Length: 234
Length: 270
Image 1 (cartoon, each protein chain N blue to C red):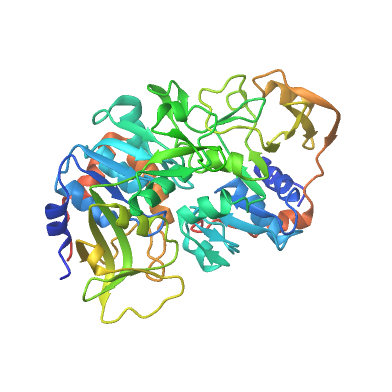
Image 2: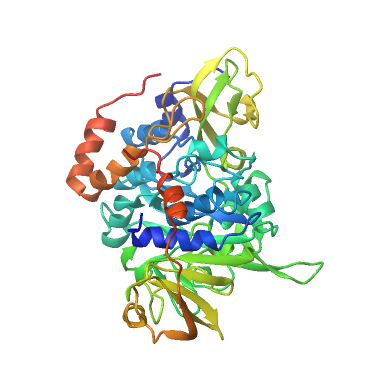
């Protein structure tokens, strides 16, 4: 059980930061993996909210889309999309919101809209979806993003959502947290040196004086993580 | 209202140049109706949808759309919509105008349309680069002075949804993830619902919504009409197809060949 992937390290570290009874707005992929891992381990009462309108989902298998049937079947309540965004998100009922992106800057602002010029993009990305209002409507924003110079950029091509409430960025190399108004490296995952995190960052990355090593995923964490499989996978 | 044939409903209710919203938030996506629009060769449509996924990728790639109004244009859990990207990045098969919103903005715009209000109001669109690129304005609360975002109401010419079932009179019942199905029907001038089956009586289902027959212009029985999306209680989402669509849609020729075989060469069943 000692070997684990970078994605598993990310999911485990993000899950550790979710407390029991946290109400958590979850997206698909790594955030869904992390939130379900928390629910399966130390935070069984963590409330998973998916933007399709399911509140308190408890899926046995991970959904591929945010609207898979199992999310509704296992939910405490299913509400419409206008209600989700108006009453629950804007209503201030959500503690933690997970966001991903194609690009992040040192202030936690995110781009999930375009690479290049908006009118003539080199890559048209899916767009903001729920992100602009999640970024300002939840108490704490958690970002999960693999750390590369293409993703961690000095200047965003487009600002989709603001970084005001970004509290933590979990990457495949470590953890960044805002210190004095700038994302600062506060943790390195086992086996990663600070220089590698610097090289993977498009700005001059600050390293916290008290930077520490992330705890290695435990056997229990990895077993719980690997018991979660995505629906439809062989 | 008598139950209708889908091809007749599309012929009678959808015109070239219309603003058309086919809704369904990952659930109950009206694929069969989208395919009928493609077969009938509708052009210059303004397509409205929170989450344009595979069916809008198909309509855009087949040249039905002039403009897309949306908030998230991807293949959920898989990646990009390659036909949408090709249209935006390379103008194939022709240029596509975008009007981009956030989910919260789109939801507020549909709710405003259903309520016959000129705009929806929300605490959103603050900061960032999107407000300069879309139709959003600021209104001041007359009571507190707070500045809020205003989005113009969605009032589609045609709203199209899929649902689980109807009765013989055309009252439509749906349940599970409801998305903006009710809002789009009540916001639209003309409406079509496709359903899995027609039953004698709509027995109560937890969490279900009923759209009375008199708010719908056509109700068409189309079993499997949401596939590869799903109909809660009838069939599951075909996640493998969403994965396969990634490779089918990457290549223009492979896309056209797939559409020829699976959409253009088929007819509606009802």
